[in-house]
Length: 275
Image 1 (cartoon, rainbow, N blue to C red):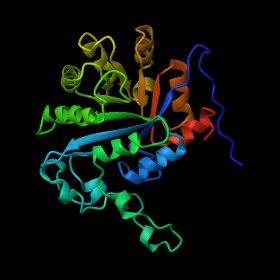
Image 2 (cartoon, rainbow, N blue to C red; image 1 turned 180 degrees about the vertical axis):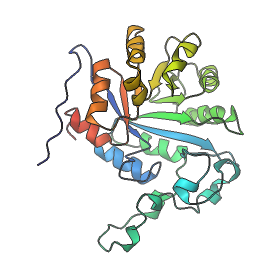
Image 3 (tube, helix red, strand yellow; image 1 turned 90 degrees about the horizontal axis):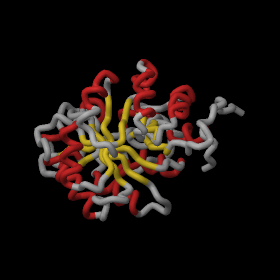
Image 4 (cartoon, rainbow, N blue to C red; image 1 turned 90 degrees about the vertical axis):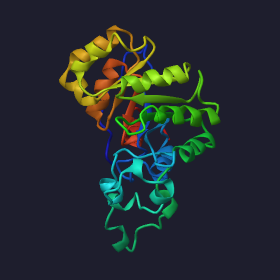
């Protein structure tokens, strides 16, 4: 039986990081599909991460790329298509294109491979039999600008999740987007995502003192001073995308608050969390 790599624990005063499923359990299952999120929940993920884009008819859907070539084999743009048009597409087959030729493959519910609306995902989380949090990233630039955040806050409000204590938090690489969220819903937690370490000194004077900071694991590896600065400033840190034991160790050594992973079950196993 394969043994999980040994993980050196964080300091006793620190709790372990929350395990967040990146686009669902997306290492093995097509990202942003209901199947990927149900799998992540079954594996014990404590939070789900998703990207949202706005359709031409005003629906928030869980899709990462602006165009659909990678995940739905079409050159269409999410922002120019209605939800009904997107619902005709297959968002799952790209992950396992030979599945139809496998006689032993389990039957797959086609509904779980279609475009997933944010509302459907929130309903799934709200109805689940344990507490699960949401980390929702708004994608920019987009032709709809601030309408994305307004629609998002309105949707969260339908669940009573647009205020302090909400299980949802909003993430973005866009400072303007998060500033907009805090204006619309001051009680919501926000995560300022950082793609490049050298941007942090520029952003630092402009982000709120209570904002969470979200660097990528590669930036923490390549620029260890970034992690030290964030820890020294007592910032809560959520790291993406953490998929290996070495990645996790970097996060444990820094005492981060959350790890966002394509492999939530693997992270939980490494942390010694039983299913």
